[in-house]
Length: 130
Image (cartoon, rainbow, N blue to C red):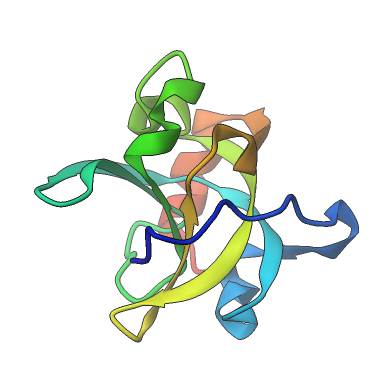
């Protein structure tokens, strides 16, 4: 997780990719779309409060979004509740966490856009393969 880079530019909406394809874009700034089916939070000694947005229940080694403490002011509820079940678009540079798990780190609230919220669809998608 890199936190010392400047905020990413907003991506081109014409270049939106599915979350399952993000691993093929490591090092590139892209807009990724998918439904959030699992969320969580963690307090890091060095980075403060972090939130994780996952696109599948079995999230190990799969693309995810990490929301850094600097962006937390952007939503009315904590991100783990606010984004659960939402179809989102997130823009940023795809990096590898621990050299294997693709991620986009969100440093600014405007990097994430909610397309729709449908918790019933999220529950169905959580149990299916991508």
